[in-house]
Amino acid sequence: MMDAVHLINFLGQRLFFVKCQFLKCQFLKVLSSGFLACIIRFREDFSMRKLLACFATSLILFVTPAFSQDRIAVASMNGETIWLDEILAVAETLPPEYQQAGLAGLYEQLVSEVANARLAAAAGRAAGMADEDRIAEAMQGAANRVLGDAYISRQVEAEITDEAIANAYDTFAADTASREQVTAAHILVETEEEANTIITQLNDGADFAELAKEKSTGPSGPKGGELGSFGRGQMVPAFETAAFGMPEGSYSATPVQTQFGWHVIKVSAKSITPAPSLEEMRPQIIQNLQRQVFARVVETLRVDVDIDTRPFEDVVADAQAQQGAQQGDQ
Image (tube, rainbow, N blue to C red):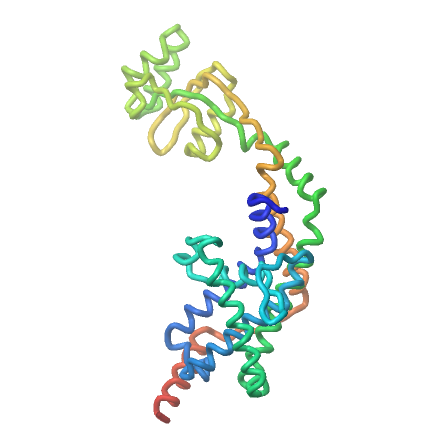
């Protein structure tokens, strides 16, 4: 039986494209929340829209096996199985405040929503609504989105193998620069001349910490200039370059200028943080590989494809005109 950790990993891998679809849906919701709602010509009929939503949900659920070969049953309805990935697909469309309840808290409601979607879609088909032009077009659009997501998902799953994950981990582990740490102190002064004078004093045997307490204008001065340990990306570029380029136990041979003033840096220690294990990195590696393969697949699909997008302002104007005409007919 799959334990909780493996279940989360399993679901996370297979819901990547469901999440992409969720983002697209959220974008459409934003558009439809204002004047662009009139583009949906049957928007005034809430029951029709809800039925279409139920059909779209049931369609997604019906096609979902393309996302995963091994499905886990959660319930049955009149002899038909309701699957785990079905309720997860619905969960992904919920607002964040509901998603915070977690799968356990939403479980019964999600099963009920899937059942409702199937029943409503079946009722709509029985009533002949699937043959109505606008509904048929919306159904075809939903089918295209689901099939497209399923295709891309299958391409991604084919490339994310154990070997690919291991190779990505080896590349990460070999990149020690990202895990390098420096323990350093500095003395910050306003002019280059002051900084050079401090370097001369250090060359003559002066104590770095005492000079920092006496001369430094930075907040670390009273602590002997100690900055503690830091990695790349945590200091301003010029300071980082100088600190990481210095040998352990050395201080600046020449002053380092930043927007804060002139620095004399002392590096007391350098280390490399051990790489996390493959198992610890596995979820992040899979996520990164998913993004890379997704981008590559989409780029391949769009070769020699010309997409001529109308200016947004023109679409807005048409939507407003349509809305005004419909309001005039009421």
